[in-house]
Length: 295
Image (tube, rainbow, N blue to C red; front, side):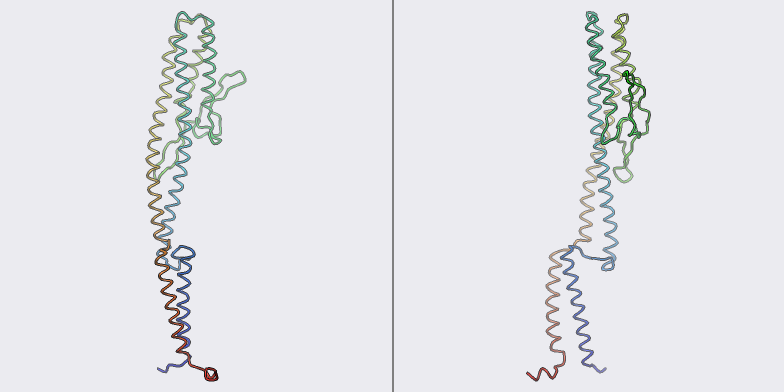
């Protein structure tokens, strides 16, 4: 086959262009810190990267859900703690009022404090966090306990549907406590009956009966808080799993997509040396012209 000067020149230019493309690839890897710029550069890396990136995004969303659960549960636990203390104080007042030496003035003082504790419990039941009522099931925009202008309760929590949040793949936890277990009508009826008997001198001997009913209501709140605590412990375990999974998923995605700087720099220097050598060799292959001899 006859080799012409044109063929040599074209081959040289084509090879030089390929060399420049490789140099551009390594330079771009250093600039972007990524192995590929488009899926066509390496379809395998691109496909794996999509899967790894989806996993990282899922973990990030689950962590946001866990954060929302912590906010809900922590505020609920704090509210139940205050409610438990209020109920314990009401039980103490019931014990004091049942003592025979207590006269009408002492019972009136106890009544005033009991009324304040009742109102305090209503405020706790209507706890609002991030614009949501946390003690009314999924009806977070509706006030669970409503009071008229005379201070009488007109409605109690009516939504018993639990608030469920997915915190891990196929793992869903209840964020709230069942309102009918804590701030139900029975609780406030027991308190109101105790207050009413304090105001009735004919029922002084019956005040001791309220000790057990108030204690029962307190136990309900304590049990609800214990159940909440168990779920909070479970949530912490899930959070630890998410932290570990996020580290693994991020590292795997980085190993798949991110460039190894040492390797990229070595490839760039090597390719630059090859390109210079190709230029030097090409300058000798191109046929001299008449100009070269007219110097």
